[in-house]
Amino acid sequence: MRYRLQTSRWFVVREPGAPSPRVLSQPENAAALGADLVAGNDDDQEHFWVVLLNTQNHYLSASKVAMGTQQACLVDPKAIFRVALLGGAAAVILLHNHPSGDPTPSREDVRLTRQLVECAHMFELRVHDHIIIGNGTGRWESLARKGLL
Image (cartoon, rainbow, N blue to C red):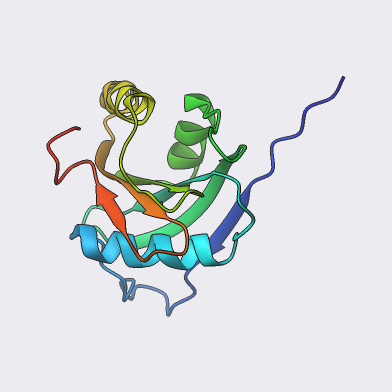
């Protein structure tokens, strides 16, 4: 049996030396990016992205690191941190969607986020937030804003 991990990557193209025009220092900005990512993958499955940021919280890139079912998505921490380290990120924002439309974090979402925050410390990376987008509702939740990081 063979397994294949589908990944996607979006890059901002700009003049050399110019900062990214998209600054993601507020949950609202990250949720707007998340809504854009979810809109491109509206297929009733959970998708998980890692958004890379530089030291000034400017957007570097976003990569899809996992895709699951309607109710779950198996996320491999190695995939997240491989993308972050190879992309030269200083910080990351985690994003995923809930196909049900309800962005309320599950116990598994909170547990995974806390584990990823602990792992990030070993690599001197910061997890700024974990945003959950409710498909088709315009609703979202920030685990940082809820104090769950």
